Figure 1 (cartoon, helix red, strand yellow):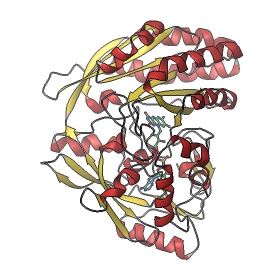
Figure 2 (cartoon, protein in one colour):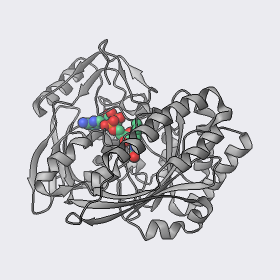
Figure 3 (tube, helix red, strand yellow):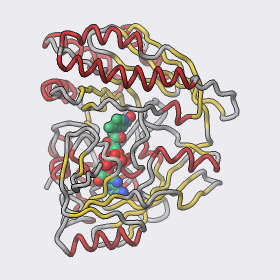
Figure 4 (cartoon, helix red, strand yellow):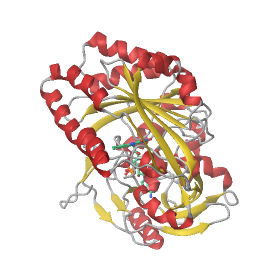
Length: 437
Ligand SMILES: Cc1cc2nc3c(=O)[nH]c(=O)nc-3n(C[C@H](O)[C@H](O)[C@H](O)COP(=O)(O)OP(=O)(O)OC[C@H]3O[C@@H](n4cnc5c(N)ncnc54)[C@H](O)[C@@H]3O)c2cc1C
């Protein structure tokens, strides 16, 4: 994400910055020296992961730390199925690292490009009414705090800080180690079907409650939900992976290659969009297969887009989706990207979008060459009326006062930040907005 001229850009091309300097520490000691050096120079310091946040949460104006030299497994607790990773480890490396131990991540989001620290710092999640986001898999972590010291947090040391630090927005320190509660490796049996949207919404509780992992995409202007239902099975069951050609045609050619061309065409000639959407919901996924969990959870996303996602009380999903449909029809917008709907169980993390409530997630997207502002602002108004909480890594306009009303522990998190980082060594403009300056 950092170009040769020293400018860092995020994946969505919504943020760019030329930091004072970029450092690539290759040990925990080097991270400590980098933080102390930045503090001495009066510079702010921030680690970035894969730059896959759409918001400015990862923007580092002073010292930018790239942790790509700080990756891999530190230790494995086989009995408790826990794995401690260095903070820069990318999710796509985990299957290779966990396989020898017969372990896997319990749940994943749509892609695997992120670093483990970046993913947990923004509350990255997948879907499943009995599963939480990736931060809920964290049983411990080690931070380099603003004074350059190490702070270990787990069930036996500083345990009271875990629900804050496991989803810490990069505001409390540099994460150098993360311990994940893993599960025995498993297979996912995937059924992907286009179904009538109204029927899916009528039977939503059953779809979500009776299946391990249920989600759907809805292309505005159509009445079809492209559903994905994944069922967990023992690692020993025979897998039926997609044949390589089918996987290439579906995921590389259709879902990304052809889609890129149609989105670009739709951006130039919006009148094409309804036809493209009607086609897309037919072309997208009508298939059954089974494979190692990570191969089913994650896909490739090469068509660049902008995204806003809100967590809502799960029961509000049908009515909110109906309001978004009505909004798009009233305004006559031609939206070429689908709306994605997912679910998660309630958790106890202070800043988790699912904190204290079972949640439904609704995400809206726009192709990156189109202006997303009007669409996202209007959808955000609807989300706000339903006590929606914005994903920390996806576009939104909410500030600290709004968020304090949505999160009972927001004030506690701000107080912890004041204690651990009084000089705002890890601060940036985004954190000032969502936590207060
Ligand atoms: C194509 C695409 C698909 C996506 N799919 C999903 C999805 O399915 N579900 C979902 O919930 N989200 C999804 N996201 C959002 C994404 O998962 C989050 O924004 C995530 O934070 C990105 O991880 P990253 O490694 O790129 O972190 P970055 O964006 O680089 O950083 C995010 C935050 O983590 C902090 N950070 C990074 N490393 C450290 C560290 N070592 N110590 C302290 N702080 C650190 C950064 O400072 C920043 O505050 C998607 C994004 C894209 C672009």
